[in-house]
Each structure stands twice: as C-alpha cells, then as structure tokens.
Length: 367
Image (cartoon, rainbow, N blue to C red; front, side, top):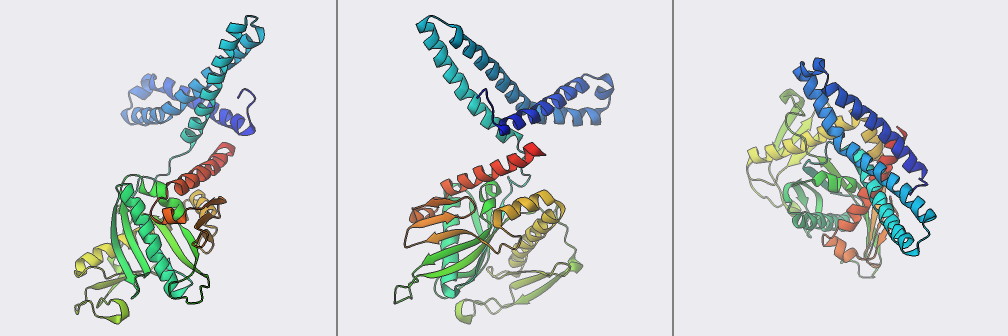
C-alpha cells in the first residue's frame, strides 16, 4: 500500500485539498468577526461539520501510512528473528487496515445523491412481445414487490392496466421506505426476457421486452403545478376485455399541457382518490424532467445507466431456459434466475451500486 496506484494518488491529492479547507474553516470558527455574525457562523459551522468525518478518516489514513513506514524499517533492520516475525505480523495488520481505510475514504468522498432517501414511483410497461411482454411485466412487478417486502418497504399500486391472462400492459406503483431510491435507481431501462410462452405449443423461445422507470417521488412544495396547465378528463373505469368495472366516471386522465405528459388512474372507485394518485405520478414525472434539465451531471450519469435518455437500450436479460440473469452494463451473469425473480435482488443491486459508485469516484477525483 505504500506504492499507491494512480487512483490512490488522486485520492490523496483531493483529500489534502479537503483537509486544507477544513483547517481554514476551523480558523474561521475562532474568528470574532465570524462568531459575531450568526448567519455566517452557522453556515461556516455546517460546512466544517460536513467535512469532519472525511478529514478524520484521512488523518487516520495518514497515521496508518506512517505506521507502515516505521514498521517496514523495523523489519529491515531487526536482527532478532522473533522480533522480526512480530514486526511482520504487525505490518500485515496495518496494511489490511490501510486498505479498508482507503475504501471508506472513497465512499466518504462521493457527494451524496440528494434523492437517495426518497420514495420512488415505479413504472413498468410492456414493450415488444404482446401478451408475453404483459405477463413479464407482472413477473417483474412481483419481483420488486417481494424484494420490497423483505426490506419492509410499503408498496401501493397507483395505476394499472391488467390483461385478461394475468399480465399488465402497464403498472405504476409507489414504494415507500428507507433508502428506496438509493437501492432501485439503477433499475431504469429496458429489460428483456427469453423464454417459451405458456401458449407456445412448439416449444420455441420468444424474446419480449418491457421498460422499467424508477422516479424519485417529488414533494408538492418542490413541483408547483398550476391548475390552468392541467386538463382533467374523466371516464368510466374498465377491466379486462372491456368489462365494466363501474358505471360512474371515476377514472381520471391528466394532461400537463406545457409538457404533453399524460397520466391516467382508474384503480380506485373514488374520483378524488384517483385524482390524488394521478397527481403524485404527474408531480414525480415533472420533477424528474426538471432534475434532468437542470443537472447535466445527473443526466450524464443516467445515460451511463440506461444507454440513452429514452431508455431504448436493454440493460438486462432474463433467460428462463438457462436459469440466467445477465446485466449488460456491468457484465454480471448469475445462474439463479428463479431466486432473483422471487425477489432475491440483493447481489444484483449491490454490484450495480458498487460499479456506479466507482464510476462516480473516478469523475470526482479528476474534477
């Protein structure tokens, strides 16, 4: 660990800059002029506090480096075999701690995604493949629901368009819980399934696709929607095959005139409840749109996740015959599709998060 990689050198250079800023803020907190200005003092104290954990970890890192250098010198110079063996054992422990400390520093250096603690609006839609794609929408929705249950998250369907054979042309759900967006944010994109449909007599494998969108839920105070910008249409809810669900005009369709975004909701018998759900979806879609427009860095990261902004490229393939799941962005292949479809997504999500954290770190270090 004493001969550091280029990444480690960049890491240390970045941390020295952070430490210098921390020391500068420490001096400012003792400056009578700053202390006498409550607003300035609070701002300075917050900036100082925000850097505290990172600087403390960096100083631990430097202490470990010094300890390693001193212990290596002892190993070289010691003539007593027993003492030399003890020094070598201590050196191994110090180097192990240094490696862990470096990984912790990398994570601490990453700027926190402000959306990580948000709930999400999960949208899953059938793509190519007709009824088979709609069935796979239901399978994937169940997969996320089972994972959410294991995390003790709450799932509420906001809107759905079921088919007569147990699938969904579209399903939109709210998932509430701790760190939902941080775990699911890399799931947006096109998901492809390869399997023999139940209706296929010849045993031929079909390929179908669905799209998944994971949107951070927007708070009402963040996205102001003017009533004049939204056209509200009501219609009768209908079920599979056009069968009437109710004869009242309880279903809602919202059209946001400035952007052309359309949201429909018909799951509730109450028009008021359908309107409330539709507004939550519309607000989150507008929030995502504004977020991508204003934050170029976030847009670039999102494109690196899903290939293109319109989510037109496949990110993952589910092959039933081979019991295989492959995530094409990170070349991850696991031969336990059955378990993953049952909600055991932990390894997939962990690997994705590690990969994209590493990519963010590279950008952060060269910034």
